[in-house]
Image (cartoon, rainbow, N blue to C red):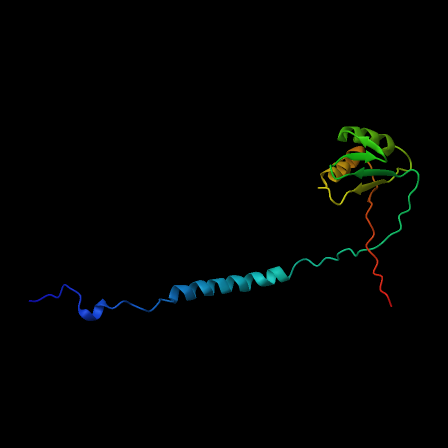
Length: 145
C-alpha cells in the first residue's frame, strides 16, 4: 500500500487568481448603504433663507451704540467698558426707560466674536428687547456702459 505524502510537480505552481467574492460582497453592501442614505440627504427640511437687503438705518438719539474691536474690548459709544458686569449695570439703567432704546452692536469683522456674544448675553441679562447689528452695506455693482 503506497501513500503519496509529498506534493507532485503539478501542484507546485502558485495560484495566480484572486478570489473576488469578498470584494463583490463588500461592494454590494456599500452600494446598498449609499442607495439608502442618498434620499435622506436630498430630502432635507425646506427653509426660506433670508435675502441680503440694504436697509437705511434710522438712528435716534436714544439708541445706544456698543462697539467691539478686534481685541474684544467693549465700548459704549466712545467710552471703554472694562467688564461685562459693568455693561450689564449700564444696560439695566436704560432697560427701564419707556420706550426702551434699541442697542446697536458694531462688531469688528476681524474679531473672533466672543465679545459680541458677551454683549448679547449682557443685553439679555439686562432685559433689553431690541438689539440690532450694524453691518457694512454690500458693494454696489457699478458697470460702465
